[in-house]
Length: 120
Image (tube, rainbow, N blue to C red):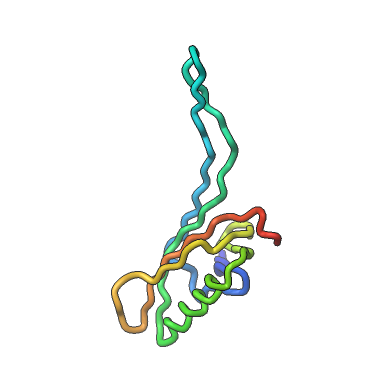
């Protein structure tokens, strides 16, 4: 099975990130009722949050990170495509360069948040 590359808007990762996590959650609240105690309220699903990390390796690693950073700084939501999952609109919430300085290697972390109102 061929794994599709991860992409966001017009940016395609040259190699998929090492780690990608998709978090699903529900908004569950406890409502206190006089003389009764409490009941749970299910207020629906929260937006999916996608976190991950990876490395750009090779002589052009910093240029590749800068291309990804340019997509981040452009703002606005776009279509996020994850390997093995249906694409969905998301906002690019965070991008960090991490790790120790190494020759020809840039490590990074990212966060995307699902955006149903992305206008796509």
